[in-house]
Length: 371
Image (cartoon, rainbow, N blue to C red; front, side, top):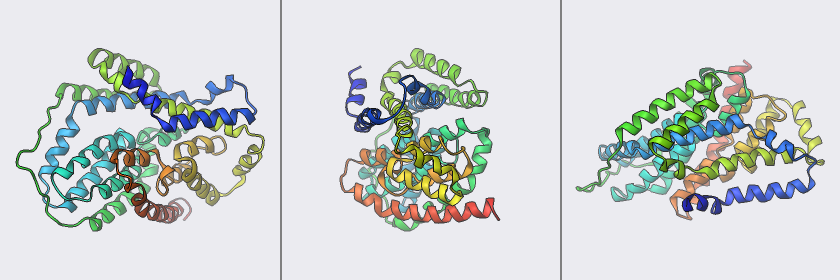
C-alpha cells in the first residue's frame, strides 16, 4: 500500500494537472456537477482494463525472457537496434505505447552488459517507434482510445484509416535506424542471466486480452473490467497494487482541466471559431496544440469542437513527435533512461521527425482523401 501512495506523491505531472485545475476553476464558469460528466468513463474503463492485462503479461516474465533470448542471437548493433525498434512499434499496437516502453526500455538498459551500443540513442528511437506504431490501432494509445470511443468506426475500420500513416512512419523510422547504428559486433557475456516466466499467467492474460477487445466491440467494457479485476483478485492480487493507478487519475484530471479551459470566458469565443477553419487549419492546430499541452489533452479539447475524424486522428498522432510534451510516452521513455543528457539528445531526432511527419503525412492525407 505504501508503494501505491508513493506513485501519487511522486507523480509531478498529476500534481501539475491538479494545481492547474484549481487555478482555472477560480476563473471558469461551471457547476461542480459538470466535472464528473466531463470525464469519458468509457475511455477510463478501457485504460484500466488495458493496464491490468498488460501488467499481467509483463509480470508473467514472457517478454523479458523473449527479449533476452533475441539479444543473444543478433551479431551486430544495427541488427539489434532494428529488432528493438521494430519490437517497440509492434508491441505498442496492442499493448499501448506506454506499456511497450515499460517492456523494451528496461531490456535496452541491460544491453550495457552486452555491447557498447549507444543506449540513449536506442531509447530515443524506441520512444519514436511507439508513437509511430501505436497510432495504428484504437487501443495503441490514449488519444486513439478516446477518438475510437467518440467515433462510429469499428475496430478494423479504425486500423484501415490509420494504416497509410503508420506504414509511412514506421518504414521511415526503420530506414533511419538502419543508417543511425553501426555494424559493430555485439559483445556477449558467456554467463548471461536467464529469466523464469509463468506460462499459465501469460496464456490467461493473453486470452482475456482477446476477449476484452471483443467486449469493446459489443459495448460491454464495464463487464469486461469487472471480469478482469476479479481474475486478478483471484490469480495475482499483487498486480492490483503494482498497477499505475496514478496514470488513471492523470487522465481523469485531463478531462476535467479541459472542461475548465473551455469554460473560460476569454477562451471560449476563440475556440468556437475553430469549427469554421478548413482542414489545413485543423491539421496544423492539432499538431501545434499537441506540442504545448501533449496530444491526449489536445484531443480531449478539440473533440469539444471537432468530430472524431481521420484528419484529427492523424494530426494528434503526428503531434506526438517533436518537443518533449508532445506525447506522454516521450516523458516515460526519457525518465526511465535516468540520464540528463538524453533530454536534449531526444530533440535532435524528434524535431526532424515531426517536420517530416507533418509534411509527408499532410501530403499523403491529401493524396488519399482529396485527389
